[in-house]
Length: 323
Image (tube, rainbow, N blue to C red; front, side):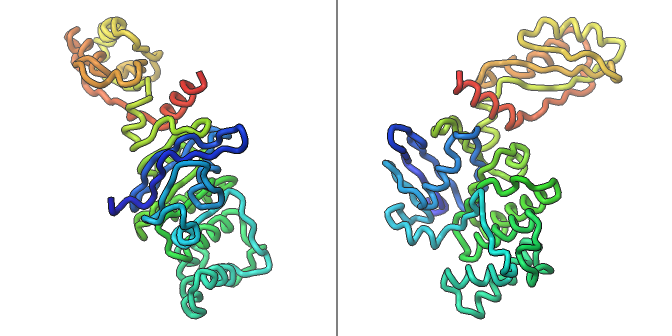
């Protein structure tokens, strides 16, 4: 498919007797931001090192922008990388640093100056272009590193923990830049992170790794529907009928009613169910509680079901794998 920018097929990496990556297969399309998730030691960094040609696979194959892994030099010209730990020459200015890397990718001198200026503006460092990198904060260095990853106009950008150690303001700046990369340039972004809320905010799909294997992958909806076992909702009923509503809900299997708070007319509830239980059947999911209350002749003034969260899916799937 023309818009597939990154594809891995049964990608495997072994170090001696230890299998670090075990049969990894997935596709990423142009303009996608793919969240690469997993606990420590799950294989996220090794996966990035394989896909960026730092490591050679033991078996399997992958391609970047249609270039097979057997042509690593050409792949490196088509990718941008921000590793988890990056060193920067403190004596150089931000402009000098980007200009140098642009020249490494073959830009003529005048073009390298133009590219450096444009990228510094895009990551919010134009006013510090002439400042030495030694005076940059951690957040500024991360933004400079992202700019460096873009000097060759890459088809795929790999970012390994780009917000690690940043304060909330710095995180917001980096996330805005990542979003702009995918939307503005159409590049595919592979984002490795431990921070689930930021993945929910900017990623279009997710891969959850554990012990070198993909446990689940797909869009947020696909992932959460596949593995999330709990739903949450709140229901508002006439205050004089709260008791009757609670009695009706008591008969719904797997449903927990939270204690009343300052709004006794609002019933907050959670429903535990097995993965995939919401597929088919008229009383699956939160339809059951709603039907029970209506059958008890209690008017439902409002009923809101919370969307499943990635954090719940992540915890569920990794817990199941450990067990």
